[in-house]
Length: 383
Image (cartoon, rainbow, N blue to C red):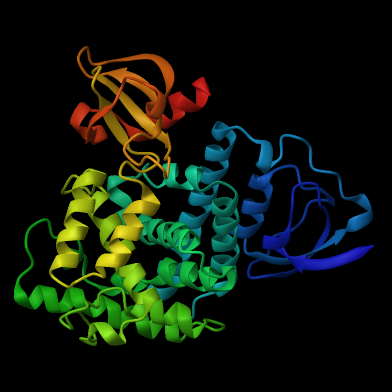
């Protein structure tokens, strides 16, 4: 039986017959079964929106499907989602620069894929957002914030339809920065008063661009518009007092600041996650952020978040693979490097809740001249 559906609804094993709606001119070479998530992500990247499948030719998903995949395979899929999202974000910026309305379909498709991945395994995408390109902060920041708010919203048990709108709003929240002069946007030092006024205008640009996006929801617009508001009423662009800032606005403010603090850029190193959490708590004390939500965000991410690096009392460097809600300071980690001898070692999986090893401190890859992307690749090979 033939059935038409959105590309985000495709599953491994579905037999695609034809493309019925797209924003580009992609040609389906021939009909066939979807072999893996990369095929679906490629269709999304090509602007495909709806397809027809033949349900009589659907293959049963093999045991290597997403639910049964190793962490290595899950991370590969997550990296693929992140790469496709970057291509979509590039087009978003290009359209915004040229004054064209944004095409919401690919944004919806890729955020839905990310949500699906997070609901099945939040660890993979949490790992991937720690692999960043210092020269692509603007491009990657909004994608990371979209992933963070999805993880946070899932932790808070928000409805999936709400999470979908939050993810889209976060994906677009900084689109207005593409209209800010580069010398202001990427200035290494402190901005002058006039420069800061120009920088703050990015929120207004984002609001204008998002408002003119066909099909955008009021909630997606709201979450983007509120990401720089503060509970004490001294945020921008509206100076809204705390009792008028929605839960969603308070959430994205936390996610936005956390990602900005932890990401390295061409002119500055990112903070460790622990240092970023400390700054978030300090901002909550100053009534910039919601203190209860900050505590919940830290609980959600874990004191040592998945994908972060830690130094153990043995002198080994390990990557956090899984947090344990009942013991946030004792996650499951994989040791792979000797801080004392400055070389890679045979990887060792350690459940710190059941080990004499314990975490001394969080570390940044740059502290040890390590490339996070190489670390992940090496661990994938080991996995």
